[in-house]
Length: 375
Ligand SMILES: Cc1ncc(COP(=O)(O)O)c(C=O)c1O
Image 1 (cartoon, rainbow, N blue to C red):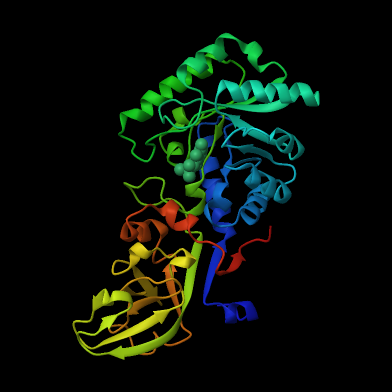
Image 2: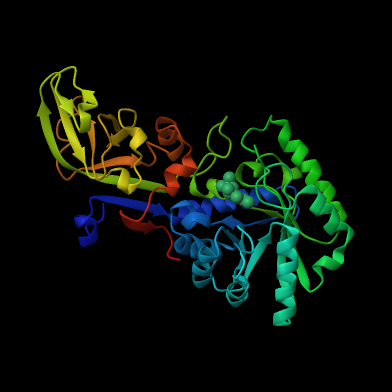
Protein backbone atom coordinates (compact mmCIF):
# COMPACT_ATOMS: atom_id res chain seq x y z
CA UNK A 1 0.00 0.00 0.00
CA UNK A 2 1.35 3.42 -1.00
CA UNK A 3 2.62 5.62 1.82
CA UNK A 4 1.80 8.94 0.15
CA UNK A 5 0.26 11.39 2.65
CA UNK A 6 -3.15 11.15 0.91
CA UNK A 7 -3.09 7.38 1.37
CA UNK A 8 -2.04 7.67 5.01
CA UNK A 9 -4.92 10.02 5.76
CA UNK A 10 -7.51 8.07 3.81
CA UNK A 11 -10.13 5.96 5.54
CA UNK A 12 -10.43 3.96 2.36
CA UNK A 13 -8.53 3.66 -0.90
CA UNK A 14 -9.95 2.74 -4.28
CA UNK A 15 -7.34 1.44 -6.69
CA UNK A 16 -8.32 1.32 -10.36
CA UNK A 17 -6.14 -0.86 -12.55
CA UNK A 18 -6.13 0.85 -15.94
CA UNK A 19 -3.99 -1.91 -17.45
CA UNK A 20 -6.74 -4.38 -16.55
CA UNK A 21 -9.37 -2.14 -18.19
CA UNK A 22 -7.18 -1.95 -21.29
CA UNK A 23 -6.66 -5.73 -21.30
CA UNK A 24 -10.42 -6.24 -21.04
CA UNK A 25 -10.99 -3.90 -23.98
CA UNK A 26 -8.42 -5.77 -26.06
CA UNK A 27 -10.05 -9.11 -25.23
CA UNK A 28 -13.43 -7.82 -26.43
CA UNK A 29 -11.93 -6.18 -29.52
CA UNK A 30 -10.18 -9.41 -30.45
CA UNK A 31 -13.40 -11.38 -30.06
CA UNK A 32 -14.98 -9.01 -32.56
CA UNK A 33 -12.10 -9.50 -34.98
CA UNK A 34 -11.88 -13.27 -34.54
CA UNK A 35 -13.77 -13.89 -37.78
CA UNK A 36 -11.43 -11.63 -39.70
CA UNK A 37 -14.07 -8.90 -40.05
CA UNK A 38 -13.18 -5.25 -39.39
CA UNK A 39 -15.40 -4.98 -36.29
CA UNK A 40 -14.62 -1.96 -34.09
CA UNK A 41 -14.86 -2.01 -30.32
CA UNK A 42 -16.20 1.11 -28.61
CA UNK A 43 -16.27 1.82 -24.87
CA UNK A 44 -19.31 2.86 -22.85
CA UNK A 45 -18.11 5.41 -20.31
CA UNK A 46 -21.41 6.69 -18.95
CA UNK A 47 -21.84 7.22 -15.20
CA UNK A 48 -18.17 8.20 -14.89
CA UNK A 49 -17.10 4.96 -16.56
CA UNK A 50 -19.33 2.95 -14.21
CA UNK A 51 -17.71 4.68 -11.24
CA UNK A 52 -14.08 4.11 -12.27
CA UNK A 53 -13.42 7.60 -13.68
CA UNK A 54 -14.35 8.49 -17.25
CA UNK A 55 -11.38 10.80 -17.88
CA UNK A 56 -8.78 8.26 -16.74
CA UNK A 57 -10.44 5.31 -18.44
CA UNK A 58 -11.10 7.35 -21.59
CA UNK A 59 -7.48 8.47 -21.92
CA UNK A 60 -6.17 4.96 -21.29
CA UNK A 61 -8.49 3.38 -23.85
CA UNK A 62 -7.72 6.07 -26.40
CA UNK A 63 -4.03 5.25 -25.97
CA UNK A 64 -4.95 1.61 -26.47
CA UNK A 65 -6.60 2.37 -29.81
CA UNK A 66 -10.25 2.85 -28.87
CA UNK A 67 -11.80 5.59 -31.01
CA UNK A 68 -15.55 5.38 -30.25
CA UNK A 69 -17.03 6.33 -26.88
CA UNK A 70 -20.52 6.51 -25.43
CA UNK A 71 -21.77 8.72 -22.60
CA UNK A 72 -25.33 9.02 -21.31
CA UNK A 73 -25.69 12.75 -20.57
CA UNK A 74 -24.53 15.80 -22.52
CA UNK A 75 -22.62 16.84 -19.41
CA UNK A 76 -20.76 13.52 -19.40
CA UNK A 77 -19.99 13.94 -23.08
CA UNK A 78 -18.55 17.43 -22.50
CA UNK A 79 -16.34 16.15 -19.67
CA UNK A 80 -15.19 13.23 -21.79
CA UNK A 81 -14.38 15.53 -24.72
CA UNK A 82 -11.77 17.25 -22.54
CA UNK A 83 -10.12 13.87 -21.84
CA UNK A 84 -10.21 12.49 -25.39
CA UNK A 85 -10.20 15.53 -27.70
CA UNK A 86 -10.13 13.57 -30.96
CA UNK A 87 -12.55 10.78 -30.09
CA UNK A 88 -15.98 10.17 -31.60
CA UNK A 89 -18.42 10.54 -28.70
CA UNK A 90 -22.11 9.65 -28.72
CA UNK A 91 -24.60 10.85 -26.11
CA UNK A 92 -27.03 7.98 -25.58
CA UNK A 93 -29.78 9.93 -23.84
CA UNK A 94 -30.39 11.80 -27.06
CA UNK A 95 -31.16 15.32 -28.14
CA UNK A 96 -32.69 17.25 -25.27
CA UNK A 97 -34.41 20.51 -26.27
CA UNK A 98 -31.99 23.42 -26.07
CA UNK A 99 -28.80 21.33 -26.08
CA UNK A 100 -28.01 21.24 -29.79
CA UNK A 101 -25.57 24.16 -29.74
CA UNK A 102 -23.53 22.53 -26.98
CA UNK A 103 -23.55 19.20 -28.78
CA UNK A 104 -22.19 20.90 -31.88
CA UNK A 105 -19.65 22.95 -29.91
CA UNK A 106 -18.23 19.85 -28.20
CA UNK A 107 -18.56 17.63 -31.29
CA UNK A 108 -20.95 15.25 -29.54
CA UNK A 109 -23.28 13.01 -31.53
CA UNK A 110 -26.73 12.46 -30.07
CA UNK A 111 -28.40 9.06 -30.33
CA UNK A 112 -31.64 10.20 -31.96
CA UNK A 113 -34.42 8.43 -30.15
CA UNK A 114 -37.48 9.53 -32.10
CA UNK A 115 -38.36 11.24 -35.38
CA UNK A 116 -38.80 14.56 -33.61
CA UNK A 117 -35.16 14.41 -32.57
CA UNK A 118 -34.16 13.46 -36.13
CA UNK A 119 -35.88 16.51 -37.48
CA UNK A 120 -34.53 18.81 -34.72
CA UNK A 121 -30.96 17.61 -35.39
CA UNK A 122 -31.48 18.15 -39.10
CA UNK A 123 -32.64 21.71 -38.44
CA UNK A 124 -29.53 22.21 -36.35
CA UNK A 125 -27.35 20.97 -39.23
CA UNK A 126 -29.04 23.46 -41.54
CA UNK A 127 -28.55 26.26 -39.05
CA UNK A 128 -24.83 25.61 -38.57
CA UNK A 129 -24.46 24.92 -42.30
CA UNK A 130 -22.45 21.78 -41.84
CA UNK A 131 -23.29 18.09 -42.07
CA UNK A 132 -23.63 16.61 -38.60
CA UNK A 133 -23.10 12.99 -37.57
CA UNK A 134 -26.27 11.27 -36.44
CA UNK A 135 -26.92 8.01 -34.60
CA UNK A 136 -30.31 6.41 -35.08
CA UNK A 137 -31.38 4.39 -32.09
CA UNK A 138 -33.96 1.78 -32.96
CA UNK A 139 -35.99 0.14 -30.20
CA UNK A 140 -36.08 -3.55 -31.13
CA UNK A 141 -37.84 -4.71 -27.98
CA UNK A 142 -36.56 -2.95 -24.87
CA UNK A 143 -39.50 -0.54 -24.94
CA UNK A 144 -37.29 2.11 -23.50
CA UNK A 145 -35.43 4.60 -25.72
CA UNK A 146 -35.35 4.58 -29.50
CA UNK A 147 -37.52 4.83 -32.62
CA UNK A 148 -40.53 2.53 -32.49
CA UNK A 149 -41.17 0.20 -35.47
CA UNK A 150 -43.59 2.64 -37.13
CA UNK A 151 -41.10 5.49 -36.93
CA UNK A 152 -38.35 3.19 -38.21
CA UNK A 153 -40.52 2.32 -41.20
CA UNK A 154 -41.22 6.00 -41.93
CA UNK A 155 -37.52 6.80 -41.78
CA UNK A 156 -36.50 3.86 -43.98
CA UNK A 157 -39.12 4.89 -46.55
CA UNK A 158 -38.07 8.52 -46.58
CA UNK A 159 -34.32 8.96 -46.34
CA UNK A 160 -34.82 12.68 -47.08
CA UNK A 161 -35.57 13.01 -43.37
CA UNK A 162 -31.83 12.58 -42.90
CA UNK A 163 -30.74 15.12 -45.47
CA UNK A 164 -27.91 17.27 -44.14
CA UNK A 165 -26.96 14.57 -41.64
CA UNK A 166 -24.23 11.95 -41.92
CA UNK A 167 -25.67 8.65 -40.79
CA UNK A 168 -22.82 7.55 -38.53
CA UNK A 169 -24.51 4.61 -36.83
CA UNK A 170 -27.67 2.56 -36.55
CA UNK A 171 -27.92 1.10 -33.08
CA UNK A 172 -30.16 -0.94 -30.85
CA UNK A 173 -29.83 -2.33 -27.33
CA UNK A 174 -30.35 -5.93 -26.20
CA UNK A 175 -32.83 -6.81 -23.47
CA UNK A 176 -31.40 -10.10 -22.14
CA UNK A 177 -27.95 -10.57 -23.62
CA UNK A 178 -26.53 -12.08 -20.42
CA UNK A 179 -28.99 -14.97 -20.88
CA UNK A 180 -27.89 -16.65 -24.12
CA UNK A 181 -30.88 -19.00 -24.18
CA UNK A 182 -33.43 -16.18 -24.03
CA UNK A 183 -35.29 -16.12 -27.35
CA UNK A 184 -35.60 -12.33 -27.12
CA UNK A 185 -31.97 -12.09 -28.31
CA UNK A 186 -32.71 -13.70 -31.69
CA UNK A 187 -35.96 -11.79 -32.08
CA UNK A 188 -34.16 -8.48 -31.55
CA UNK A 189 -31.34 -9.54 -33.86
CA UNK A 190 -33.84 -10.26 -36.66
CA UNK A 191 -35.65 -6.95 -36.19
CA UNK A 192 -32.37 -5.08 -36.20
CA UNK A 193 -31.12 -6.92 -39.30
CA UNK A 194 -34.27 -6.01 -41.19
CA UNK A 195 -33.84 -2.34 -40.29
CA UNK A 196 -30.14 -2.35 -41.21
CA UNK A 197 -30.98 -3.95 -44.57
CA UNK A 198 -33.39 -1.09 -45.27
CA UNK A 199 -30.76 1.54 -44.49
CA UNK A 200 -27.85 0.39 -46.67
CA UNK A 201 -24.43 1.92 -46.20
CA UNK A 202 -24.80 2.83 -42.52
CA UNK A 203 -22.59 1.16 -39.89
CA UNK A 204 -24.52 -0.77 -37.25
CA UNK A 205 -24.14 -1.61 -33.57
CA UNK A 206 -26.10 -4.03 -31.38
CA UNK A 207 -23.85 -5.79 -28.84
CA UNK A 208 -23.24 -4.61 -25.30
CA UNK A 209 -20.75 -6.62 -23.18
CA UNK A 210 -22.77 -9.83 -22.99
CA UNK A 211 -23.89 -9.35 -26.59
CA UNK A 212 -20.25 -9.68 -27.68
CA UNK A 213 -20.33 -13.24 -26.28
CA UNK A 214 -23.52 -14.15 -28.16
CA UNK A 215 -21.34 -14.63 -31.23
CA UNK A 216 -20.41 -12.89 -34.48
CA UNK A 217 -24.02 -12.48 -35.64
CA UNK A 218 -24.37 -9.86 -32.93
CA UNK A 219 -21.16 -7.93 -33.61
CA UNK A 220 -22.09 -5.91 -36.72
CA UNK A 221 -19.65 -3.00 -37.29
CA UNK A 222 -19.25 -1.64 -33.77
CA UNK A 223 -19.58 -3.34 -30.38
CA UNK A 224 -20.57 -1.23 -27.35
CA UNK A 225 -19.33 -2.88 -24.16
CA UNK A 226 -19.41 -1.16 -20.80
CA UNK A 227 -19.59 -3.51 -17.81
CA UNK A 228 -17.10 -6.12 -19.08
CA UNK A 229 -14.44 -3.43 -19.48
CA UNK A 230 -14.69 -2.89 -15.74
CA UNK A 231 -14.47 -6.57 -14.85
CA UNK A 232 -18.13 -7.47 -14.49
CA UNK A 233 -18.80 -10.99 -15.76
CA UNK A 234 -20.54 -10.78 -19.17
CA UNK A 235 -21.17 -14.54 -19.11
CA UNK A 236 -22.78 -15.06 -15.68
CA UNK A 237 -23.35 -18.80 -16.26
CA UNK A 238 -19.64 -19.48 -16.79
CA UNK A 239 -16.29 -18.33 -15.40
CA UNK A 240 -15.57 -14.63 -15.74
CA UNK A 241 -13.23 -14.06 -18.72
CA UNK A 242 -12.53 -10.46 -17.67
CA UNK A 243 -9.79 -9.18 -15.39
CA UNK A 244 -10.73 -7.50 -12.08
CA UNK A 245 -10.20 -3.73 -12.30
CA UNK A 246 -10.90 -2.31 -8.85
CA UNK A 247 -9.73 -2.90 -5.32
CA UNK A 248 -11.52 -1.09 -2.52
CA UNK A 249 -9.58 -1.22 0.72
CA UNK A 250 -10.87 0.41 3.92
CA UNK A 251 -9.03 0.86 7.15
CA UNK A 252 -9.83 -0.66 10.51
CA UNK A 253 -10.36 2.20 12.96
CA UNK A 254 -10.87 0.25 16.16
CA UNK A 255 -11.10 -3.33 17.42
CA UNK A 256 -13.19 -4.21 20.45
CA UNK A 257 -14.01 -7.32 22.41
CA UNK A 258 -17.69 -7.75 23.27
CA UNK A 259 -19.53 -10.20 25.52
CA UNK A 260 -21.83 -12.96 24.31
CA UNK A 261 -25.32 -11.61 23.49
CA UNK A 262 -24.09 -8.04 23.13
CA UNK A 263 -25.70 -6.04 20.31
CA UNK A 264 -23.69 -4.23 17.64
CA UNK A 265 -24.58 -0.97 15.91
CA UNK A 266 -27.91 0.75 15.29
CA UNK A 267 -30.93 -1.02 16.76
CA UNK A 268 -28.61 -3.84 17.79
CA UNK A 269 -29.49 -5.49 14.51
CA UNK A 270 -26.94 -8.21 15.22
CA UNK A 271 -26.12 -9.94 18.49
CA UNK A 272 -23.08 -12.03 19.21
CA UNK A 273 -23.68 -15.66 20.11
CA UNK A 274 -20.29 -15.83 21.82
CA UNK A 275 -17.60 -13.48 23.06
CA UNK A 276 -16.67 -11.70 19.84
CA UNK A 277 -13.96 -9.47 18.43
CA UNK A 278 -15.47 -6.67 16.35
CA UNK A 279 -13.45 -4.51 13.98
CA UNK A 280 -14.89 -1.13 13.00
CA UNK A 281 -14.09 -0.25 9.37
CA UNK A 282 -13.98 3.23 7.81
CA UNK A 283 -16.57 2.89 5.04
CA UNK A 284 -20.33 3.08 5.00
CA UNK A 285 -23.31 3.72 2.79
CA UNK A 286 -22.23 7.32 2.14
CA UNK A 287 -19.22 5.77 0.43
CA UNK A 288 -21.42 3.55 -1.69
CA UNK A 289 -21.02 0.48 0.50
CA UNK A 290 -24.63 -0.52 0.40
CA UNK A 291 -26.81 -0.61 3.46
CA UNK A 292 -28.30 -3.89 2.24
CA UNK A 293 -24.91 -5.51 2.98
CA UNK A 294 -25.59 -5.22 6.71
CA UNK A 295 -25.57 -8.75 8.21
CA UNK A 296 -25.05 -10.15 4.68
CA UNK A 297 -21.78 -8.87 3.26
CA UNK A 298 -18.28 -10.27 3.58
CA UNK A 299 -14.89 -8.61 3.55
CA UNK A 300 -11.39 -10.04 3.33
CA UNK A 301 -8.22 -9.36 5.28
CA UNK A 302 -5.11 -10.80 3.67
CA UNK A 303 -7.40 -13.26 1.92
CA UNK A 304 -9.23 -14.32 5.13
CA UNK A 305 -12.97 -13.68 4.94
CA UNK A 306 -14.90 -11.96 7.73
CA UNK A 307 -18.63 -11.25 7.95
CA UNK A 308 -20.26 -7.82 8.07
CA UNK A 309 -22.33 -7.82 11.26
CA UNK A 310 -24.99 -5.29 12.23
CA UNK A 311 -26.16 -2.36 10.16
CA UNK A 312 -23.92 -0.61 7.67
CA UNK A 313 -23.97 2.99 8.87
CA UNK A 314 -23.12 6.19 7.02
CA UNK A 315 -19.34 6.11 7.47
CA UNK A 316 -18.71 2.80 9.23
CA UNK A 317 -19.30 -0.89 9.08
CA UNK A 318 -18.58 -3.56 11.65
CA UNK A 319 -17.09 -7.00 11.00
CA UNK A 320 -16.65 -10.13 13.11
CA UNK A 321 -12.91 -10.88 13.24
CA UNK A 322 -13.02 -13.41 16.10
CA UNK A 323 -11.76 -16.30 13.95
CA UNK A 324 -9.09 -14.39 12.04
CA UNK A 325 -5.43 -15.16 12.80
CA UNK A 326 -3.99 -13.00 15.58
CA UNK A 327 -2.45 -9.72 14.42
CA UNK A 328 -4.35 -9.31 11.13
CA UNK A 329 -7.32 -7.26 12.28
CA UNK A 330 -5.65 -4.35 14.01
CA UNK A 331 -6.28 -0.61 13.88
CA UNK A 332 -4.82 0.83 10.68
CA UNK A 333 -4.93 -2.47 8.78
CA UNK A 334 -6.71 -2.49 5.43
CA UNK A 335 -9.77 -4.60 4.74
CA UNK A 336 -10.79 -5.55 1.19
CA UNK A 337 -14.42 -4.61 0.51
CA UNK A 338 -14.35 -5.14 -3.25
CA UNK A 339 -11.45 -6.68 -5.16
CA UNK A 340 -9.91 -9.92 -6.34
CA UNK A 341 -11.28 -11.82 -3.30
CA UNK A 342 -14.64 -10.08 -3.49
CA UNK A 343 -15.52 -9.30 -7.12
CA UNK A 344 -18.32 -6.77 -7.73
CA UNK A 345 -20.57 -9.60 -8.95
CA UNK A 346 -20.14 -11.49 -5.64
CA UNK A 347 -20.69 -8.38 -3.51
CA UNK A 348 -23.79 -7.76 -5.62
CA UNK A 349 -25.30 -11.14 -4.76
CA UNK A 350 -25.01 -10.33 -1.03
CA UNK A 351 -26.42 -6.83 -1.63
CA UNK A 352 -29.27 -8.24 -3.74
CA UNK A 353 -28.33 -6.15 -6.76
CA UNK A 354 -25.97 -6.46 -9.74
CA UNK A 355 -22.29 -5.66 -10.21
CA UNK A 356 -23.17 -2.53 -12.20
CA UNK A 357 -24.80 -0.96 -9.15
CA UNK A 358 -21.89 -1.89 -6.90
CA UNK A 359 -19.43 -0.12 -9.22
CA UNK A 360 -21.55 2.92 -10.06
CA UNK A 361 -22.06 3.52 -6.32
CA UNK A 362 -18.35 3.81 -5.58
CA UNK A 363 -18.58 7.61 -5.50
CA UNK A 364 -15.76 10.04 -4.87
CA UNK A 365 -15.21 9.81 -1.13
CA UNK A 366 -12.38 7.34 -1.39
CA UNK A 367 -8.81 8.29 -2.01
CA UNK A 368 -8.21 7.06 -5.54
CA UNK A 369 -5.12 5.53 -7.00
CA UNK A 370 -4.89 4.80 -10.71
CA UNK A 371 -2.42 2.02 -11.39
CA UNK A 372 -1.14 0.76 -14.70
CA UNK A 373 0.43 2.56 -17.60
CA UNK A 374 0.05 6.34 -17.35
CA UNK A 375 -2.59 7.72 -19.63
C1 LIG B 1 -27.46 1.76 -25.17
C2 LIG B 1 -26.40 1.06 -24.39
N1 LIG B 1 -25.41 0.46 -25.04
C3 LIG B 1 -24.43 -0.21 -24.39
C4 LIG B 1 -24.43 -0.31 -23.01
C5 LIG B 1 -23.35 -1.09 -22.32
O1 LIG B 1 -23.92 -2.20 -21.70
P1 LIG B 1 -23.04 -3.18 -20.80
O2 LIG B 1 -22.59 -2.36 -19.64
O3 LIG B 1 -23.99 -4.26 -20.39
O4 LIG B 1 -21.92 -3.65 -21.63
C6 LIG B 1 -25.45 0.31 -22.29
C7 LIG B 1 -25.47 0.20 -20.84
O5 LIG B 1 -26.45 0.00 -20.20
C8 LIG B 1 -26.46 1.01 -22.99
O6 LIG B 1 -27.46 1.61 -22.35
